[in-house]
Amino acid sequence: MMTQYDAENQIAMLVAPSGGAVIAQTTSSIVIGVFNKDAKSDGGKLQNVHSTFDQVLAMANYLKEQGC
Image (cartoon, rainbow, N blue to C red; front, side, top):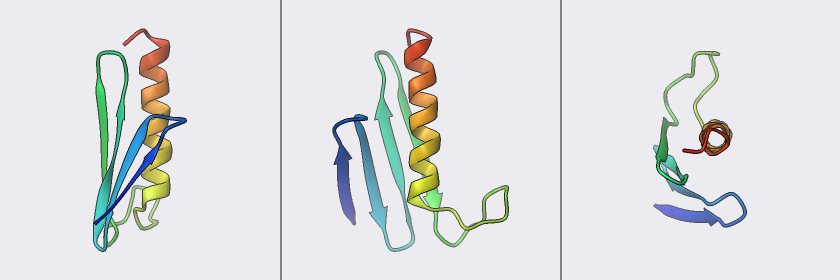
């Protein structure tokens, strides 16, 4: 498993051969997104760390804007 931390966005990425997770922390919340490299998303594309990162970052930023 590979672990990477994006200090600018305060997001941790955990990646294994078959999938992984992206984790972000806000003031009062933790946002966790998981992905399976063999599963397809709603759009029909395979799930991946980049799309999961974007979605977790967007939710974390939204929660921060709401004061959470």
